[in-house]
Each structure stands twice: as structure tokens, then as C-alpha cells.
Length: 124
Image (cartoon, rainbow, N blue to C red):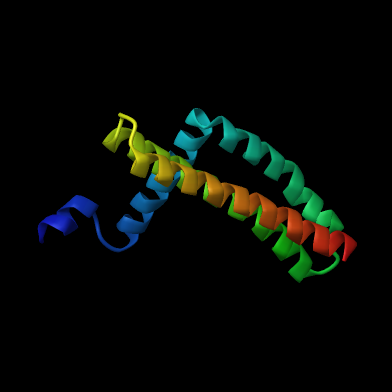
């Protein structure tokens, strides 16, 4: 096996099991270290059941739930970018600031998207 294969671990089903474990570790790290993620998860805990109640069709429910899930995805990616930037560039740096600001903008856009989707479906 080449070095990259050794680094990634096992193959086949074991690789998928390992990947699931890493994903769970990532969710746990986000929950433990990111206040914004905790708030968004708690909001999702309210919004997702509400989507099942308020959505009239499966498509409406999927759009409402998907827009909420997108917020969580954007927040995790933003947190990952911030962690890497902080590790790579602890001093003030214009590129580091730009990267962090862009991650934050992605979260904002996902929030605006969710608001628009919910507004269109509920009042459209």
C-alpha cells in the first residue's frame, strides 16, 4: 500500500465505519466548542418538527428541513475554516481575516436562504 492509503486506514466497510466515527467526532467537537452551532442545533430541534407540521407536502417539508440542515453544514464548515486559519496563522493577517469573513458570510447566506424558503412556503 502507498503512504496515502496507510494514512486513511482500512478499506471497504471498515473505511466507512471509520468515516462515520470521524463524522461523529466532528459533530461532538462542534457541539463542545462552538456556541453558535449549539444554538443552531437547538433551533433545528424546534424547526424540523415544525416543518413536519407546517409543510403541506413532502417537497415542502424537504425544502424546510433542507434549508435548516444547510445552516448546520455551513456552521460546521465555517468552524473548520476558522480552526485551520487560527492554527496556520495565529497572528493578524489579511488573508486569514478574509477566509474567516467568507466562512461567516456562508453561514449568513444559509440563514437568509432558510428564512426565504420558510417565508415562501408559509406565506407564498
